[in-house]
Image (tube, rainbow, N blue to C red; front, side, top):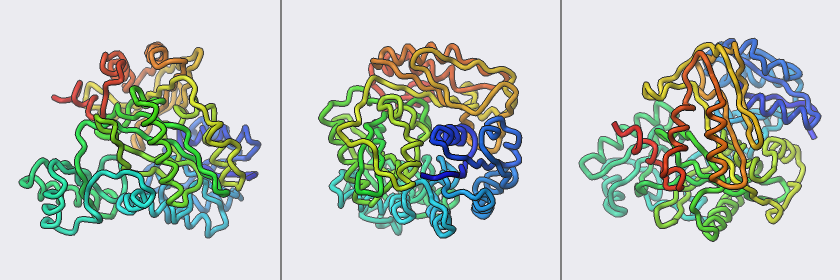
Length: 448
């Protein structure tokens, strides 16, 4: 087991890893930007180093500064959290070349799965269903028209790199295909430095189902059941839950087993998430693998009782998984709301600023993962999420009621948050009946 770990991240996930290290008897080293200097959670680390200016490019994304902090901090491993460098295969390789373990998959597995086109090929080899589409990257308009003609409109143009909805366009017919293709390429090049795109059949009104997996270095790979992340806005998740509502048990088992086949095919180790879309007839299709811990990992922790961050650290240090697939049970129902510093009444405009007052909810089955406090200033440079509210109850109906009560208790003064909007979602009859898909939020409230 490691004795000292650096956390190459900030905020809520940095605090989450610090806590896991403390419980495992491991010393933690934190990093911070000038914008995060003085953040209260940094005091919980055994040591902390400034790695640069406020902007991500000047600090959390600056590989040389992060590695320097790790070397000065004399750590044995780096936990990347999520975002920033978490899925950067180059950073992963540099860590290992500096004799520092990277708490995640190998650079090779990360690189294969980070390219969505290559990942699709791996999925086919593992007999995991993929959405019908091009065999490889689309080189020109003529090829795009040919593929679209074969699979039928509407089609989805997707960037092979990155995520978060960037480099994605829907073309309803041949007239819009050419411009949509160019827009997707341009956006992908700007966002990821890679303008490669491919085509696939556009599955209308799908659900977003993802499977949490973890694999060790001894050939063991298991799933920790699925999450439903269909309640989203512009491909950004608002509410996540487990188990997925209205999913037949046989289909749940089939999807989870497909996820395990996928990661075994890729030679994947550590925690990751295999993402699928599910159509109205319960046909599921692989879309991508997130080669890191997910924001919504607490949902899985609550229903399985397994600490995923501790498991990540243990697996990376060479320990075998302490549980088998048969021992991973899903009990009850968990829901997570991402609390973002955004104003839903102003098209979810980010609302950085000082939190004048904060009251966090509690009670049976309630968890609030956050690094903020009264007096904390939310900086404008990073993701707007200030915390995650998670509840766990025996049934989905009880979990919804518990979450509504917890959202009512949550008071964040001085800035706007997404909490009022999430209460609207949870009160909606369609959500309560599990009749949702990835277009549900925008279709119901944001169409105009």
